[in-house]
Length: 607
Image (cartoon, rainbow, N blue to C red):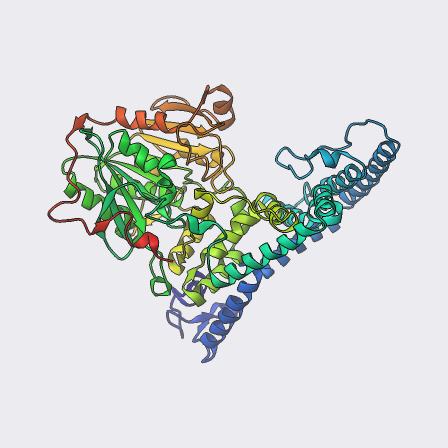
């Protein structure tokens, strides 16, 4: 039963002539639901679940409501309408004047510059007539549409963001860079190759379509095989339950740091993003520096796991792992590490442990992790009561949220980079982008159980319960301010999933003796997989100690020195400084938890 349905049918106060579970009617009197009430609910849910598959999980009702709200506010703003008309006239004149000047061969500056992240018209061919006129006209239209969807009196900021985003997505469909005869690179290549590029592109599209329909990975991903050339750091699975396999990695140094490291990845991804190829494996790097590393590998759920919730993931995930680690490495505290959603879960776990007097943690590291979701980036565009209820209907029908459905949402957030540029390269130019290990991992999709994902969206994103002290563990609320162990938080500059300013908010909630924040170049995934020697990487790092005043994120970034290179050595040194010395390596497993199988285990190979 979804949260929406539960609110309709549960916890109704009993009244005269009524009882718990009754449905309210006029006058506040409760009555028993009609015999067809639950059949009607089931019919609604089945219909919406079917519809959701054709709309990519986007609620038509929510989108229509948002669009109407924008239109109504714009219709009631005659001053804004006049302003838009004036802007349209000015932009038209600017465009015509620019077109005439470049048409006469004059060397003039563009009348409008694209946004810094927009590289669609950066090529030299786009600076030549008539393509410069075409691109400039499109950018002027894009700017006007942005004006039309923003700064409207009475329109909420959230609605404004959604309308602006949707308008931008619609306009991007008709970008001249996506139209073969308006794109100079495509036009030139087609002429030079006699259309052979379009033939190759057609074959590429057919191959991609066939693989998508069959549920197979994209072309080239088969070259990266788990256990063969990715996820190959030696180790043993020392524990398995219905949700996780716990991997203990084999030490390679004569002595190790006394406190082991537990890594909790997000279950929206497979763990081996942190153990890719040997040269860019974070796990291998930590082991080489003398750390005893344990890794959670999540099981890929099926429809049978539909009722697993956040409490199950905490209990059978990090809490179960800590019990095993304490048996294998007794009398030692643990450096806990969480990545993305795994970091949020680990923060909840740490807060609950602190509340209950459980002091088994030595430190907490979060990688691209949010604990406050009020500014969670463009993902919030998909978070509203209408959207969440719509997704719940889809998940209710199949028991989980499919990886392809999640991947589609992330691609929309960066459509120019992940959709349109790929279409241009693969289908119009007929060129395949070479596959790499990170791209192959990204195509190795996972699923999210119905109940867990519903709770995650509602309790964390929609209601922001963790940041407001309303998130409960074992029927009691937890507070991040109870966490007193040292915290190391990593944000990435180009993160669209967990924007670094949102990650930085850990300073506002934690009451730890020290909070070290590190900002690295790159995005949500590539910024974390940032091995020593990686080109064009840099980071900033500063520690805020107990008693010091708060520094806002913009001041922090402007005053914190920048360091070139990977952030991994800085974090490893931070862990080493908070360890109690070197000891002999522990055995792989224990009498109570003997090795089950070799790493990477079974769960990571599940489709």
